[in-house]
Amino acid sequence: MHDSIKIILLDIEGTTTPIDFVFQTLFPYARHHLTSYLAEHWEEAQADIAELQAEHTADAQQGLNPPPFDNTQLDSVVTYLHWLMDRDRKSTPLKSLQGKVWEEGYKSGALKSQIFADVPPALARWQQQQKHICIFSSGSVLAQKLLFTYTECGDLSPFISGWFDTKVGAKKEATSYLRIAEELGGKPQEVTFISDVTAELAAASAAGMQAILSVRPGNPPQEESERFTRVTSFEAL
Image (tube, rainbow, N blue to C red):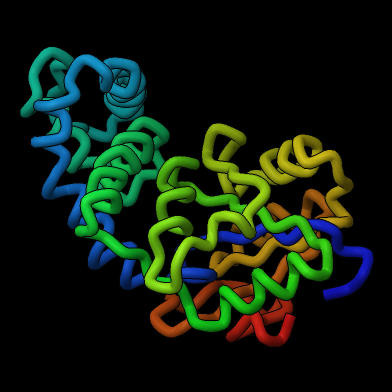
């Protein structure tokens, strides 16, 4: 990693963590436990439910035919959440609720996150080089912190100095990366962003960041991948 790079911004799914863990473990766990979580935490979930109501209204106005939504009925809220999950929607209230469900799973010991073996030594190496290591993921900041705290390799969260989710903006929009650089007090040119999605890399590159494509087992092929430097392991960085 060049000395001019002061900040390393990491995606999670397909970059630090196998896609299979997200789709075969985390998402099914959240889907299975959403109903019981909401039944137990209905009042404290009202802010997320209000955001879901607004999102549902927008979906209906766009002709996307979402299922009927009644913010007073548990089954109705869960049905819409499942509809969003089926579409892999990067919905902020959905991601918020998923994170809260996963929190209970991690803390009970039912969940332990998988991290590629080359990631922990790379985090230690970058920290020793005085690089700031940050995360930008569509999953909520809570979900990110849980994933790095409860890993099969131990607690990796102390290596991470910044956490960003969709509240800063969408991952395929250059303005999101400009905001992140500003919040970190750095210039985009001082940031390297690593992700498995070329559309995200294009946005980061448009913002002035160095962009690197993560090629991991199980990652789907990406369009225009030849535009970006490719790595199969953080050992090369």
